Image (cartoon, rainbow, N blue to C red; front, side, top):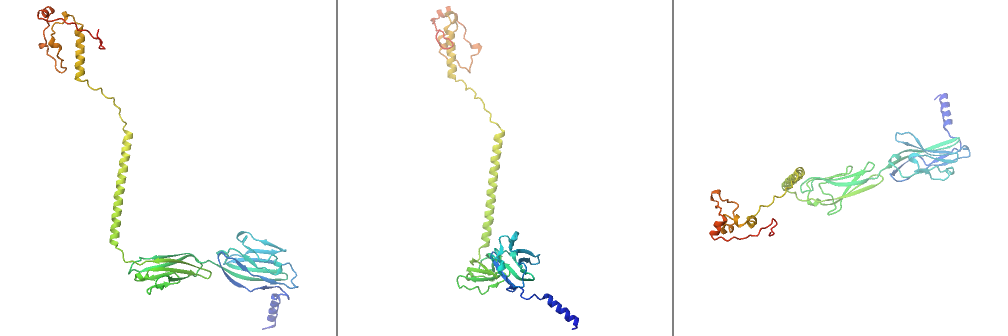
Amino acid sequence: MDASTWISVALALLLCRSPAGALELQPADETIEKSQGEQVNLDCQFTVSSDDTGQLGIDWTFSPSGGVEQTILMFSDDRTYDQQGEWKDRAYFTSKDPRSGDASIEILNLKSTDTGLYKCRVRKPPSMKSRTTTLNVLIKPAQTRCYINGAEEIGRDLKLMCASKEGTLPLTYTWEKLTGTQKLPATATKDSSTGVITMKNASQEYSGTYRCSVQNRVGSDECSLVLNVVPPSNKAGTIAGAVIGTLLGLVLLVILIFCCCRKQKEKKYEKEVPHEIREDVAPPKSRTSTAHSYIGSNRSSLGSMSPSNMEGYTKPLYNKVPNEELETPPSQAPAKVAAPNLSRMGAIPVMIPAQSKDGSIV
């Protein structure tokens, strides 16, 4: 190495070396894992010397994975500057006076988006130091569901499934039997990364309660199910019953539709055809009333007759009631008899009182 090279190295060391008594930060860089919803304390302790005479300045920044650096908190000119946005009311200095040498901060209600690199930078001219903390916010397993895939029948193959809706990978699944022999069937094969147990040629000894536990680095969750292996069912009878039930349902539906349509047609017909109101025809006169009226009219006419006008009438004629349906032909009508002849024949003149139209005697 020549002289020029030695000079260059010496100058670089002088430029990079902090002055005597420069501030120091503790602890060293670290990595922290926390669960979503928890809180975390990011330490940053510093010490200064008499040579550090400048204004104290502290700032915390956050850089998401592959993202742009952004400021969380600042302390300058003996006062704290809080940031707005997603850090508002979630990040603050743990010490009331950071000038005491404690620049640590606390973050509440952690989110998965809080995962990234946090840097604490302390300035006390002419010195300046910084330290970083890598924070991984993990999600606990949650909303884990257990279910059976396949027919629970003797001789069939089936699977016990376990899946967690939430949780940061990797997840580890563990199955156990809680009843009976409390041992998994000998033919069961399990996959701890997917949470699936495959059972071949199931038997009634497989029946019981099973529990699945899932965990990751920050938490765990579990679920359970009941397996009941039964003899094979009569599928032919089941299918026949389903077909018959479906046909009966269709028949009832057709009958219902037919009745509804018929009812609608009847209502429509009643609206279109109005009801006719007819006046009743007067009943026919009876023969008795006709005969009485006939006799009454004849009596009234006979009552007004004088003996001279009673020719052709004899006593037997007034005792007969004429028939309305049969009329005597003109050729058979009795001949008129004069009053003198009636006297000679022994007839006695009789006065018949006349009647008015209303039936009173005149």
